[in-house]
Length: 479
Image (cartoon, rainbow, N blue to C red; front, side):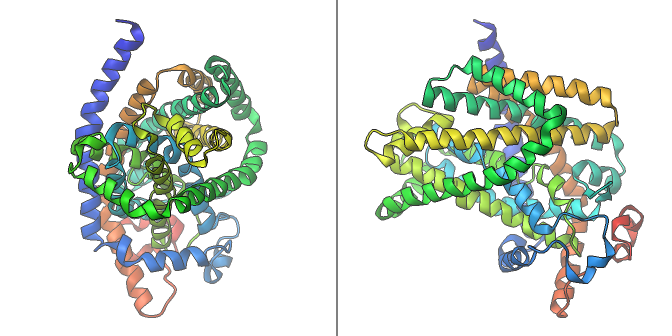
């Protein structure tokens, strides 16, 4: 047995136990728990989510604009857009394809379910991130490491999460991103994966050592355009098969509950793959999006919590569903393809005529999505490394390691890459879920305060004195 086969076997074993049983169980339990304790906030306040999103296009809320001239320069809408940009990409294109290939069409049903229920977890973690945020030099900062340290007073726990998110985003997820890019270019253009590995590693190192501002400006223009173009392409293909939509829904539901095992996968594999790949895509309860949610300037923490919950719907119920319908309409999901290659083959099959324009478009789109995610993922890690210890030496070592993992990910087996990502994602998610289980009562208190003010016809405003027991830890909300 080769070294790679041995590593793949060990990674698969650990990943199987940790993610297939532990994480899936805890994730669903947390989603159900927060759905009950918030009285289904993700359902009953869906209209409020849309209202807040439409209102939040302004940089500041009018009634508090003068309070924060130096901080909160990121609007609620901008923070929402930032989290959507980090979500839409590899998970929507490659992750959905992998879930269907390994779990069968029924995986889509469980992906929907974890999004609908998990939106409550997203609400809680993002609300907590706002509650316990701190003032940085130019904007607010926050996330699980901050609310664990300030809300639970457990420095070791906060550091543990900081280490796990660095491993997950800086290393594991970046290996997935580079793997997806190299696979897409190999399948579409025959571009050698070894060459792409070198190119990606060099580009990554150059950018994270000083050029990120230029790339950020470029990404702000290109990534939204590519995302909209992909969604439009998906909608065109779905419209081309509009008469088959009831059939596709039936396919998904029947396979999800094992009524038609001939479709591929079992009830267990469909559930596991749907939950795992759904989490990779929408990140609900994972602990990543609170880092973006904390940066927004709002008058009440619940506002950003509601908007971030809406982001889960946008990612999974819109973009992931579009990809799933493309693949299922094409019928090529049983042909042995996996990951981004399956999505490319499905689009080419639907466009017909022997052309590969759709495949080329997906290849270009995934390059921009995944490469900008590599840079964003790196900064998730750097931020948390500096939370642990503000050391330039440690950051420089981390940069070199990121360049190395980008190279290795591009040439490594997809199974190993996804397996490693699943392990670190599961550990990070479990760490975050344990924290929000303990701190979730504050999100529920905030929700009640928010609804009380709304019922009085007010635009809700939160002040630290509302919850006296943590007033000293929420200095950003002092009157």
